[in-house]
Image 1 (cartoon, rainbow, N blue to C red):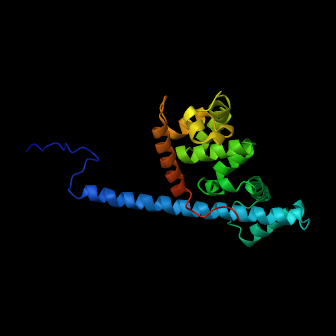
Image 2 (tube, one colour; image 1 turned 180 degrees about the vertical axis):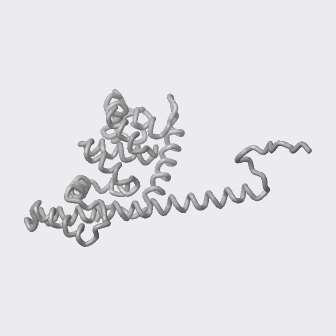
Length: 224
């Protein structure tokens, strides 16, 4: 007796329930993403608070660098399995706080990126306007650390913002003061506007972008 060959395509739904199963799998994935974001928010807030604590102690001349090293040793002895609180990282937390302490408008952005992304921007970008640019672009485009580093090294900020000679007439008409902050290439790229965009199209994209960032900024702010 000749057996029939199995012609079933791997991965192809074979039951009527599988679309529903996929919905459940999507729920699980979404929950995992929310859990990751919640943990990341707590971690960034913790680093901010530790950085603030160390900064204030040093500013008040209560601590010197040697005390920070003792703190790292204390944390290691207290919990040998706890990673990320070396002397070097504690000073990074201090730098993190001091870099953004006076820049309240970006505090909600910090918790939307992993610590490695924040470290990269903080260490390689010196101007506050440029840091905000990369924070927002990394969030919007969901860049990996490698892609973020590539964009910084290839000077995306300079190419998109500083080298454009004039601001869009639409931007100038709606908000004259924006000329000193944004340049046409940044606005067009950021809002995905086509060339020759209308005022109506610009206003619509601004509203959509504002709503998107309001939703993404809903987790707790990193400011303390």
